[in-house]
Length: 399
Ligand SMILES: Cc1ncc(COP(=O)(O)O)c(C=O)c1O
Image 1: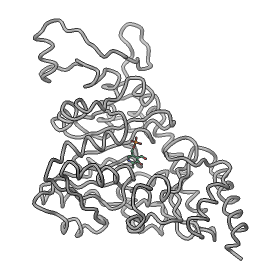
Image 2 (image 1 turned 90 degrees about the vertical axis):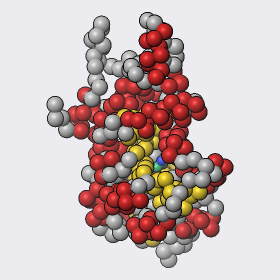
Image 3 (image 1 turned 30 degrees about the vertical axis):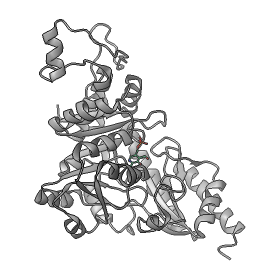
Image 4 (image 1 turned 180 degrees about the vertical axis):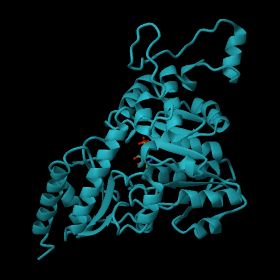
């Protein structure tokens, strides 16, 4: 039936148990599975027949979730893994081998940067960090050995928006794959595959689960690619997602659309407030007219997301003092939870990027990233205001 995404998020793959009628997804802890015959076992392991054969390669509870996320992203297949970084590293290793090259947008999550900067070269992978807001830079960075372009949009932490359709056209021209980290948006707000990407990634630790109690990641795309990732990479590296965590994400997804709508409303109100405060030097939020890619964001994203980044007047000292003065918002490395979470990228999530490179990635000393929670917007804003006023008074900044 042609349900809207909010309905699908609840009903897709919702199959009441045949024996008991229970609606809640059951959790299957099994690692081992019995087969009727040796031929049957061989058919499942070869992929000729559907089924689960060993816990490191899949699990029935995880499978329900994989199929649900595949449907939400409009993908043929999906693979659930133990974390967002497990999804990112598996996808990259599946596309890249010794001697290959990848183009990466210049502001990406610190963990992704760390993998590409320190681990990937050990496998003989060459990486170019490029400003992908100008697509000419991508064409210029292409080499004979280039196998993929990797991007986040909106990016972490500067909320840069990249044109997936345009970048996918360049990738097609050079016959390279486009991989998009869709963590900040969730499948409700943006579907990169529909814009031409080949692979979409998620850290489900964030919005998909949404309650700060699960680490998980997903890779969605074409069936043969995903099945290779399952068998050759996830299986061999042992990065599988467990059934209990899959159950929690299935539960979290039932409220994803409701949660995302409120995250977006709270982030928009917070961004507007910050823009008006004299202690704030710059606000980065795609929903503001002042955002350099505001028009593109309106075209590409259903709503503007729950993350706001901003620069506090007074640099490192003022921004850290601001975090210390907050009473409602909590200092935390994560995002996408029910609570408003704030962090200082230069010393926290992006500390693995050397200081001289951080500046060209837009991670300045005064930058704060805020993940708007599901509290009342007025309370979030009141908390930010009292903390900013305190910093201004204590550091005598606005006098
Ligand atoms: C955009 C983005 N991608 C990937 C990750 C990594 O996810 P995980 O912590 O689940 O490994 C993060 C973590 O913050 C992130 O912000």
